[in-house]
Length: 385
Picture (cartoon, rainbow, N blue to C red):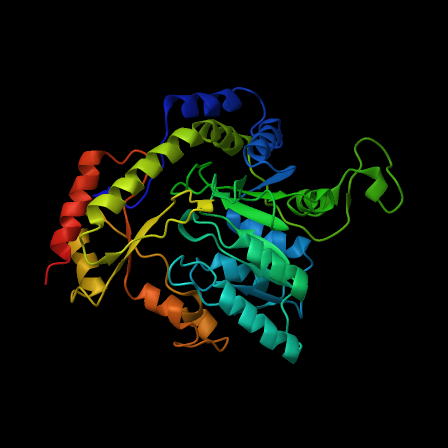
């Protein structure tokens, strides 16, 4: 079966891992700060903090932005559940903002409308978590302007968007208070599991580093009574063990060096999809002049005005043909857990309509042209009535 995505591991990746295994530092060694520095440089930002997963990054991001009991956090329903769960981990509450049907990202118009109503009701959010779905950056400048007007912080979920660009700058470098990236094996680069948080704020970066290691500091200036010796540390807040290992960081650094080639290949494959799929009864991903998607996913929507085949039928036909299509995402508010919190079908109609007809096609750096042609041929057959 041709998967919808998979990692690309080369000899240099294996050599980087082997070097760490022979170095004496499997964790808490030099590979992690080196990876952080390289990632920060590649994304044009001052600080990068490595963590064990993007979910851990979102959790720590909420804590660093002081989300707690009574805090309100808004995010997008078209995402993985971690984008919402992170607020609940920190004790806050969650609400959603519907998507723009073209970009499949948080709708700025819907956000502004909801903010205006919340301002009148006294229910404004403390943090907004926009999601760069499929690797396409959100309308960050406009969301940032609304943040200044209505007083919320921005925790950008860029789990799909390593290497993406917005208005000529790298994602994670300018508009958000904190930006979280993922290195899961199906993402742009991988460290097996792992994530990174970028920020321009030195104080936030320092707190994130402390929170990822149990809330412990060895900095005497932060201690209650000063240091008692070179062995001494203090836990000054409740943190977690969300560290990345040196093995993972070494793989991440090696993959980061390969990222330009990955991106070039993904762009070529996506452009080819755009061309060969144009005659089919599909809505294709948006291509916008002010941003460069990292193209983590290539998602099409079956246009029911031109095609009578239900999405489930097309999905099952493709799987039977050996094409590992997927669906991203079941809207978060429709999950049983969130329904028990009071959300229901119809709350966010644009996200629900998108979900009802979406298919994620195979897209990864090692996808061959022959495999892509196989995907297109199978998709064409699957859409036949």
